[in-house]
Image 1 (tube, rainbow, N blue to C red):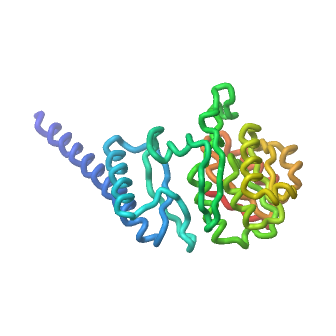
Image 2 (cartoon, rainbow, N blue to C red):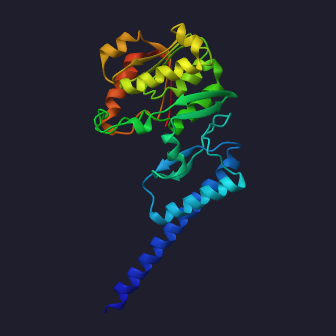
Image 3 (cartoon, rainbow, N blue to C red):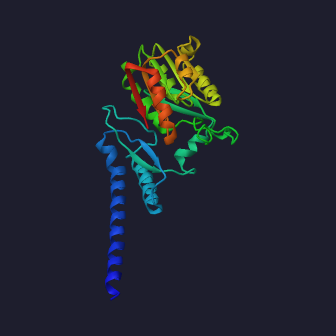
Length: 271
């Protein structure tokens, strides 16, 4: 009378192991085949939801992809616009996150060198975000590099346009976009700590445009009609990268987009 339940439990266990093995093989193929399928680039995406065993597989995949030259740590976007994703387990000690702690980071995007100052270790518990977290705009996130590279392959999207970046953080995307000669670009964030760094990065990388007032950093609290009106909308192009990760911020962001966009505004987001 007890053998049937035991056999059923064994079958369930075997099923779980088969599914786990299938997931691991799928992710392995994503890591190894993805760069070949999409011709050149891989975008790394962090995740915290994988099992411990799958994390080990992913770390091994990342290591061997780097050794074999099948993937690059520098995320970017294929020239033909097709999207590709590789999964990277998030850890405060992995090499991709350690780059957040650098005071200065150097990038070459679209063949042009850029230098961005960061302040990840300058954050304190006394300076939280509206969400209750310590401000996250103190480092350059992967999606900013992806979007910057994407814009460089499509200069006509930015050239001679009025451009607004929402949630700019350190303003890498605005810096790169400013090098594409917009009529005017405004990098926005809510935090004065971040805005100070953004202004410094604009002045360092595109000094002539910053001095002429064509590249600037301004405060914009999502959902604020007053802040949005002060920017003189609508804009020709609105851009943003990794701008939101908390559900309670979705509605304020959407309201700000509605306030700053017109009928013909182009919205480009990377996440």
